[in-house]
Image 1 (tube, one colour):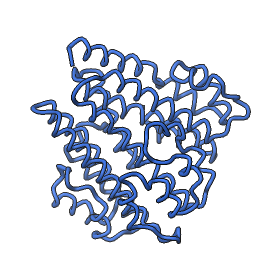
Image 2 (cartoon, helix red, strand yellow):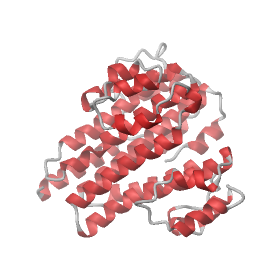
Image 3 (spheres, helix red, strand yellow):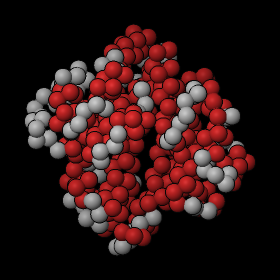
Image 4 (cartoon, one colour):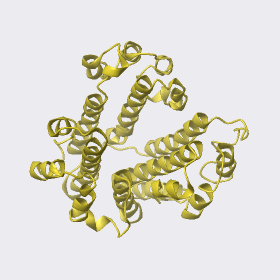
Length: 344
């Protein structure tokens, strides 16, 4: 790829990022009282006015609004990736694998929770980008239906061993682990195929950081909310590509108080990416680190793969922020509690 093409793609990514929500926007959003209020606000924002122009604010359903916001983000990432014509094109298609994982897990959660209306937020617009049969997926009612929807994909072999007719017996954590492992194995294989030197090391570091923070979050949540034993915890951690040693993993798992994991992290290599804020949510801690790293790459990186991954991370965080605000309003959570979940 020429230097001119490189610069054009990076400039496009930065221009799109410039339209993202600002701190002042979030301050206004958390003071709103209804989903229609959020829709009205976002319709006037440059990042969402096009995708929401035909939305009827007073009748919009929460799930429909969330789906459109996700579609907007996916469309932006797709437009960016279509500007890239180079031998490493396969690297930029990793986001498809990630989206497929998230869709499958979302469907499994509807089986477990029996909240079938949650299917309304499934990204049907993704249909043209995947071999998963989205028409069938939207209508799934059980594990057998799910297998039918993924029958012509690699996901069939991943999911088949876990098939069950009883939602209570769905091994969600094991399936999540298998899907995540597949994604990261693909990521590192493509990085190894297309890159070398410092660029390869930097891109690997982006994915290694994501793995490590996911692992830390899993350790915390499994200890705090499920009182899981060490073997159960270790079996669902992605360890193949992590830089954290087995010894340090064991030390975190052995901590009697899960909240001490945050103190443990404050003394780790991740301390440089955090401030003195008292983090209440482990997800916030992990997300904040990824956010700060992504912003650094967005502002200073000169290589397309690094800027592209930074754009994806920052996009996902914005979607999570808006979703948290919508859910916060839905469940009548206080402004302060909603704010504590937002990363900006």
